[in-house]
Amino acid sequence: MDVRRILRCSGVLSNADHVASLFVRSVPVAGLKYFKPPADYSDMKIPERPKLWMLPKVPQFPPGMRIPKSQKRLIDMRGPETVHNQLLHKQYGIIALTGGKLKHGHMEMIRMTLGRRIDVKRMFAVWRVDAVWKPVTKRGQGKRMGGGKGAIDHYVSPVRAGRVIVELAGACDFEECKPALQEVAGKLPFKAEVVSHEILQKKQELERWQEANNNNPYTYEYLVQNNMTGCHRWCSKYDKIWFGKYQ
Amino acid sequence: MSVPSVTTLRGLVTRGPLLTCVRHKARINIQRPKLPHWEKARFQRLTVPQLPQTADLLSEDAGCYHAVERRPEREENPLEVILGKMVRETCEKSELIVFFHRNSITMSEVHKMWQMLKRAGFTYHKLFSNTIAAHAFGGTSLAPVLQLCRSHTSLVTCPEPRVAQLLRLRKKLPQLVMIGGVVSGRFMSVADLERYGQLPGRPALLAQLSGLLAGPAAATSAALNHHQAALVRSLAALSESQEQP
Image (cartoon, rainbow over all chains, first blue to last red; front, side):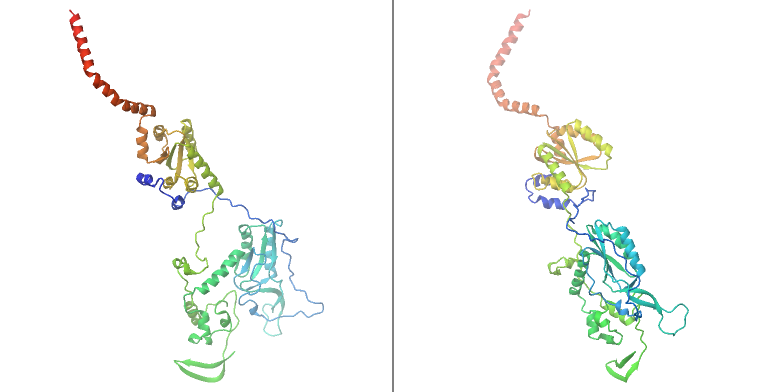
């Protein structure tokens, strides 16, 4: 340490804050923990039914109606979710990263897990998926082909990539809600992610930026639209809509 | 499934029958997607997005997306601000502020050290972090001492500049390493402090000063009275020799 430097510096240094900023982070040292003041949720209203309500296992049909069976309709699970992909209460929720289908058992799991974990005085949860409505038929194990379509075994609710499954809101922080939502997201039959409103916005902003700042002149969209290497031979019609982003 | 059978082979368009039937399995498995065909995999590999490097993102032309994980600015801790103010107030009232580098030390040793210094009239302060030092000294006349606050730092303050006493006590503070100080508003290094400690006390210095000031006058009066004094001494010696038998 140069003494003469200190003497020379005395009274000459005008930007002491700059000097401080150069040296304050030079050595890792245990500091004093900063406890942030809690966020203000005074204008938050908790609804009368804060927990998730039970969804029916079988959809209700008018009496006397023949209960319909339906096709597989994988299109219900393919592609992006364009409608229910934002958080209504702009707080926290679970988003599906890939398509899939939810059975009644999954919905019960979500309901029970969140019902156990949330504090009803401060938080509330909201369903963002429909109750099961799509019939799934099964022939019976070991049966031969033929004899008509199988009987309805159970019902499912199809989900597309980007769909919000369930939302959690209230006078709570993300760090508080994340463990409960993470537990649910891990048990879903498709890849799902716990997000907050800020995280979702950042993801969307990142996507837009990546699109705008891609230096690769060859994009899937360009190659498909211009039939490069004769790709229309093997492209599906959905490659021409989603350009390889979704299955 | 039927497809139109027109193929291109090296630029030559070949036509087969108008329609041919091919077997095409349209059923896909969403949750367990199969590996893509070589052609499709080639497309996917070719179309991997090439995004600007992190260094380019910091330039102004990079666009307004804050994709770069800029280290967020450290939030000001109100407790650190308060502690900084307290240190600043103490230092403003102190004539002596000595900075030490603090090595590993247990709380019991700290307590003993603090007690010993307190009995001697000094006050020991631990700077929890250099941020507190920045709050205490930043923007004041003591700002240059922030160069000393690089690592684990402690202060010892005293309302009087009793440097020599502190230097003697230094032997009993093995975990503290003196790195500099401020005495009566003057920045001093360790060598300067040691030199300052060896200086005699204020009364002694005042006596030396008054002796220095009185020196020329005393020399003049001695010079003026030299011959008379010599004559008096000679006459006294002569009278003593004559009185003795």
